[in-house]
Picture 1 (cartoon, rainbow, N blue to C red):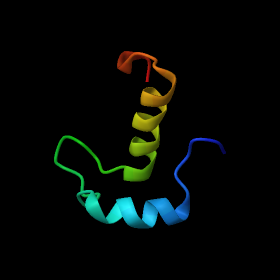
Picture 2: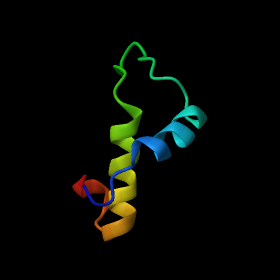
Picture 3: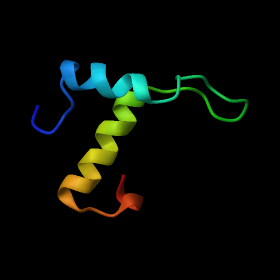
Picture 4: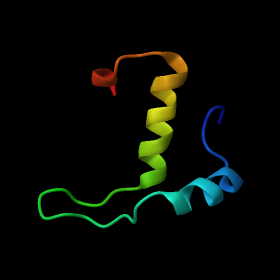
Amino acid sequence: MRGVLTDAEWAIIGELLPPEHGRWSRPAHDNRLFLNGMLYVLRVGCPWRDM
């Protein structure tokens, strides 16, 4: 897919992010999915509230 992080890119960036541990009120999710979403918003210029 165009614009999605490759495995090689994720191997570099993934280590810099905090671990995927949930909190009491917020369950843990996939950091890669969130980062791809943020990069999508930056790439296409849609408002954050449309995510």
